[in-house]
Length: 179
Image (cartoon, rainbow, N blue to C red; front, top):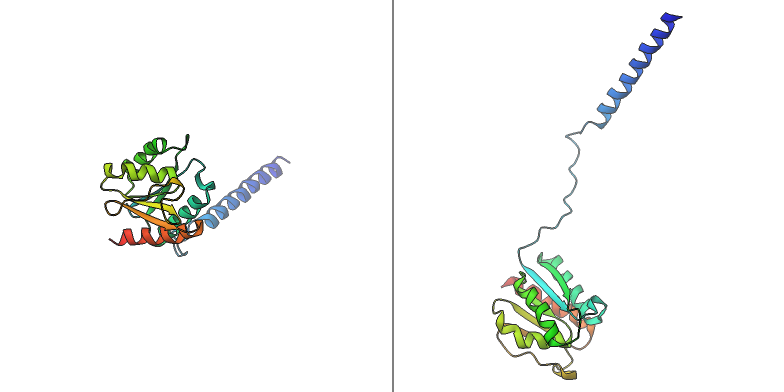
């Protein structure tokens, strides 16, 4: 019986060895397979940013402006990001958030919300290499909103409705990246 037990032991080892070899062969990489498609998008070094009111993307105009930035990014491969100006809804409070984007590598800053626009009108001259796109409701200057000054590094975008912000922002960002 002892021989029968050893034979079974060697038989089991042989079967185990065959299973391991079969597994290695089955899992061995096949050089002839098609490579997986690259899914990562390669971005340009250009950054375009959005400054929103404290409500962030819950603000209808800001949400549409963000959608416009994403549309432009998909088309032009610019990097986009946004920052909400938390805290008190005043131009003085929005100014540091605006400055953070301007010195943080954004070549253009889209500004949504009355207080953000007022902060940009007052402080854009401090960042001459940054282009500011100011979203203004209706005729601009409504509801106490300061109208964007003509020329310089600011441009007012008059939007009749929040959905207009998406198309105008996408269009302006595409134009900025061409020049």
